[in-house]
Image (cartoon, rainbow over all chains, first blue to last red; front, side, top):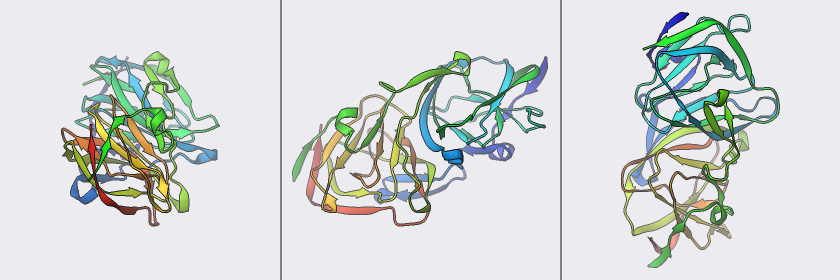
Length: 162
Length: 162
């Protein structure tokens, strides 16, 4: 069993894998006569490859508990995938660089407050890992034909700790 | 002063203007080994006109109170605009058919539970009308160059009642 220590999620640590969707540091301005604040363009949506289109979905995740055991990773060769939580409840994000077509060394993060993530196209990540309660996420990813899911079992079991 | 009686928002009444984003009636299936339910492709995102791209934003709206007084409508000639609430708190949606380049007769709706709306490209609507508390919405619309906002003052003041 490999142990993986989770760290707090920040823009800096996540930068190689995509974007953290958060208000802190976002470009922002007032609209609608000052009644609404717009936090602008929070994620790089990449959904058009091979005739794809951006789609909006809701993912309702069953909660897991820490320590978490992981056995596979996945990636989407044809588009990005953004997860935007409906609450500020923490959840776990696990990513890896590519290493010759398989996930390289895993990194685990725990969200802090209202934070979403947008996984870049072809970035290895673990499927959604909610904590505590059933949790809803708005998901913006790619719709359309083509094989947009690749899964890779992990060589040994990994346990995420916090 | 014109009085406008709001009605409950449903897919049927909103169909001429875009889509209601809701779980009821959505195509749905289990993913991630049964740990997540995916409610699939909830809105027709239209963001590519004139070199545009889909962008994800957060809108933080100050609350209004009923009865509401309206004095202008707007539309986006180059793309759709989806509003997805982070809570189930009701808010007000006001739309109108086009009548020769200006808003025709207004229709007002109040959301019921977790409901978002996706305004179709060039559909007249009122800017965001939250109720009760400061309210956050994930907004998916079009980014890029080009004039994508048209505003039209209303001929007389309109009051929305519930």
